[in-house]
Image (cartoon, rainbow over all chains, first blue to last red; front, side, top):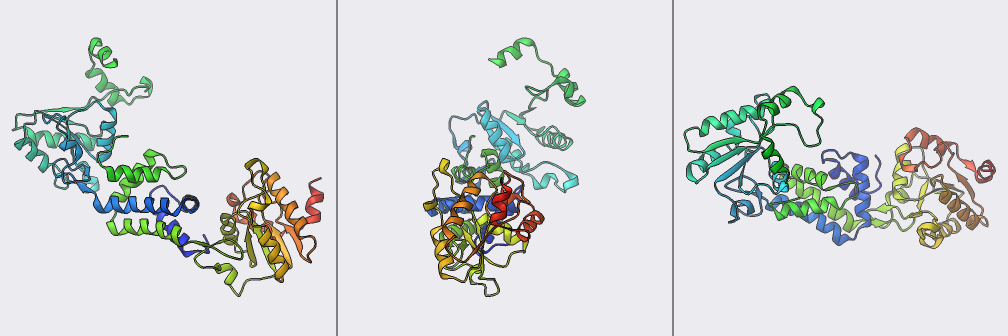
Length: 207
Length: 207
């Protein structure tokens, strides 16, 4: 691509570094910004720079945070006795969006995956065990992806926690809402049969 | 979407203002930036802010420029006698990418479109006539999109230029009707420049 302006070329190249954004899309975004007020574009640039510079990771749950302790860990209304273990901060957001969980979180920062060279030591597992030791945690919900790596991680953590008086649970595996039974994989279908629920429970949940 | 960090929420909202970027994509981009070095992210933010603050429009051709006169208008190797009239700076880039044109440009900043309330006075037509009057321009190539609005613009400009000793041509219709100039492939665009026609031929073909 030929640019007659180094300023534009530079901005396009920076946008094109983002995942899923090619040169043409980057140019479209830059030309869009060119039509905006300079103040607005400055807000955009500053929001990004500030975000990266000032962001912290909560010292308890490792979630992203504006302060040393995140807003979820600080909230007095939330249940200290139940901790939901997730792979990433995206999973925290996904669960928060459901508005169905009122406990705390623990972000592992990944999942045990020998192929990718990720072992337990690279994840925030030690700090989870320390929290269970120190706090009045009664239940740890393992909310990791239903993959072999996820199951390995669940198994590893459950072993680390077995000496403490804490209940370890996993989120239910089953057929997704709106999913077609015939297209479900065998593992999921088998698991959803094994973990079948009394109809009363199911109907109550629907309310 | 629920965020536990105002910094992240702010950055996501700014990204989501861009065209074609929704909240989910914005979040994906922000989480990508979160993994980069703070210095890199600062470069990104600054490139955008600086671009918008320092960009100028060339006083001759109205193309984007880092200085008062753009690099194309300043280039001594380029042919002063031939001016290519385009709607937007994206079209300048598209034509420059073909590497088939060695003249100068004139960016109209749009196209005559009564439906959108854009008349000749909102476009850089007066300054084009002034350039033709003052300079040694021998040929004006109309490289606007082949639409009704484009044809109207060609017709209007050709009338404004008819008293001057300048040849008005249009790019060849190698580009499909209804197609946008900037999405044309380079071969087609290059061919359409090489096979440009005198305006009389073009108007006859339309009948």
